[in-house]
Length: 460
Image (cartoon, rainbow, N blue to C red; front, side):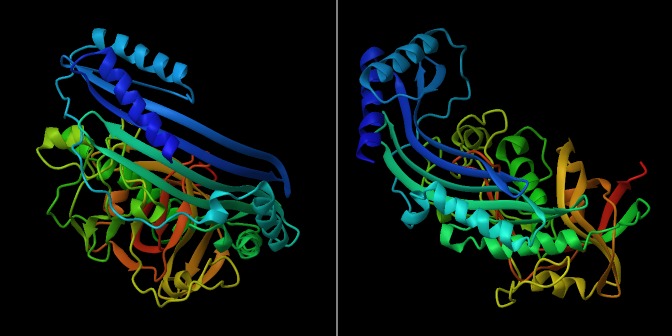
């Protein structure tokens, strides 16, 4: 950590010397990512990255410029700063510059698990082996990832901070005769990844999806498993509660209004993964975006917050200027932590899902959503496909496997007051994208929704 702090401080000093009166913000990060990928029940790739990146932002004479490089020595750092100094002299005026983050105390967080941060390929391989064994002879594919990041932030306003965090995750499928079953988990400790249980879960779902029948497109009551709910959470985080989208009139969110069902509470918790500050240097915190159906807050970086006349919430991210400040550690709170998430035979992932299904007279159980595309940010209408298992529910029991659907659905409408019939009793932490060290992480229970608009089936 000392080297990163020195690197950030040195960059601030170099920029200040090169250009008098410049405002400087520097973030130095070391990302270590271990990724083990498998297909056809065999590990086919292991990737290990250990990259230190310095990002420098300068503001001078009403103009802003930024750049980054993977540098470790004085010459590389000096070249980076000189390049950005040259750029800021000819950059266009930046009328929305919000100023540098002032000095502020950082929240306390737990240290990352050392066994996860320093995990060797063999440790991930053992979990993959357990997943393959748990699949019981079915073809298995997926990835197991460990991530660790250290960082230091410094700016010319006297603000400085450090970070140390990590996490891990597994996403896998089991396949038989073209039918797939899925299992995912993203705990904070590698020891909590139970590859055998996840493999068995994926295999049970694949076997239960044999010989699916086709159901006509229509609006159906649905039970979305946590792996499907994650797509709703990601869309709400990226577009719905994004302060930039709200400023631009491209979001449904209106703080203070009862926009979602009272059973929905959504909390963004970056502190759980050790994220103490954002790319602006703003301290992070647990932030309740939806409180029992009421839109309680939005996510802001310093730029979007200045435009709205509010305080930043700690949601600036590198390389996401076009998308703006997004919640990347968002979850829907479960209703009853006492409900056991133990395995249940057949297509149902756990007992909290089984408890919801038992109350459904007729509906559709959906394991996963994919290839989703945003059609209208203001109403959060998306189109996409189901995958990895769809079943008919009749009289509280799963009866028939169904062929995949295409859907076109407003996620806001699906969660509006009166539309959420049940929220699962246990929330599952789920991994975001495969590769990046600081990928999103979602926490999702199952949801029972009154209506879901399936617009097409296997026949069109």
